Image 1 (cartoon, rainbow, N blue to C red):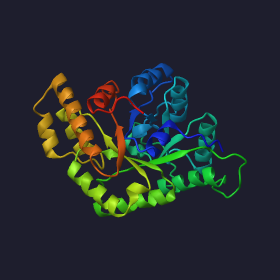
Image 2: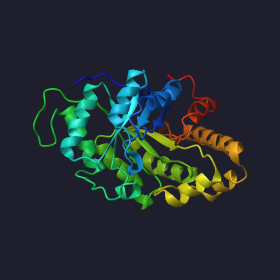
Image 3: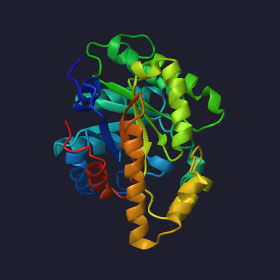
Length: 306
């Protein structure tokens, strides 16, 4: 196995406050879209997530887009979802990704196809996210395929996954995180944090279990563009917790002023998250608004990057 550590892994293991962002691949084969987004994020992040057919809509392959980013000097986190592949394809793809020099990966269940524009598509879900993490850990550490057969060279992976601190039943969220850590996750990117009080309660339980010492937790943040976006996320996005106070604040502004307020709110959130014991960084999900990320990172006092 190529044991070279990724930049993201080095930053987190050094104890620096990490910054990742998100690059949604295009609904086409246009590599220039990926390059443009990646170069916007290059100097203000430690790594850039490349989503895997997010919202169950066909987009450029996460691995291919991550390789394009790597070609222009942008470190990527490629995503792998259980929805579209059986265990054969899941193992094959990660071997290819590792051979291309991609190290960071995020394991996800994947949005159900009924939420996308091809609801008639057949899902797979051969494995769940916990078994996916465990399978990749064994491929890396034991050089074994899921069936138990050995391989001469295992993939070099820094394995992460997602966690939603706000989903019900809330009292089991920290326990579920522990299961993911036991399966092999080394970093976590959370759902967007708007309800800081509830997130702080979750982090208290995480610290009580000592999980913050076993995994690097990157809190998700999203700059809001408008009150309408805030209401949509509250009402239409499963597992999202957007307090009424956040919506009321955004309702005071329109157009460019609303976007400026959304950035301000995001920066304030990051500054509060930095003060929470156990939060190792932030994952900025600026949905089709990558241009906002450099401003957010600068205003949050997170430049230059390590």
